[in-house]
Image (cartoon, rainbow, N blue to C red):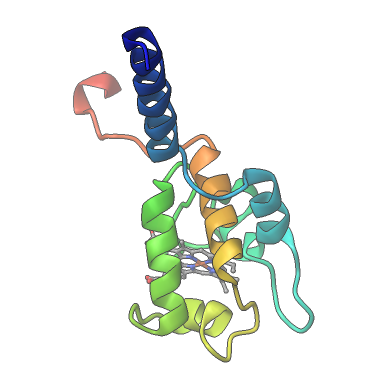
Length: 129
Ligand code: HEC
């Protein structure tokens, strides 16, 4: 094999692995549908976290928009298994939950929420003047 062919193959391999590491596994469009869907006998994720996860019905409900996909996926798996305990979220996605999530649902929802604009910001007192 010629050296130029080897270099071309090495470049191709390197660029494709970087792309795979950088992008979350889920499908944001499917995640949006799932996040807004109302399951039979249950309530949608968006009914508490509001559309696109950029709001909340009360102060105990966190903002989800723009949070890292890997964190969202990890914590949803923890609510589902019961490792992370919260009465409301365990009742949604836990073993007997009213809105059970598959692994694909979790990846899709996490990719969708991570792609949304965050309204979280760092407090900068000097900006208030
Ligand atoms: C009844 C209201 C309600 C519904 C419906 C609901 N959530 Fe939540 N969610 C909450 C509350 C309250 C918390 C904070 C729980 C805690 O303190 O651990 C939370 C926490 C979370 C978190 C953790 C965020 C963080 O910053 O730690 C994620 C992710 C999440 N919800 C996603 C979802 C998804 C996806 C659905 C739909 C399957 C959903 N939620 C449905 C109320 C709700």
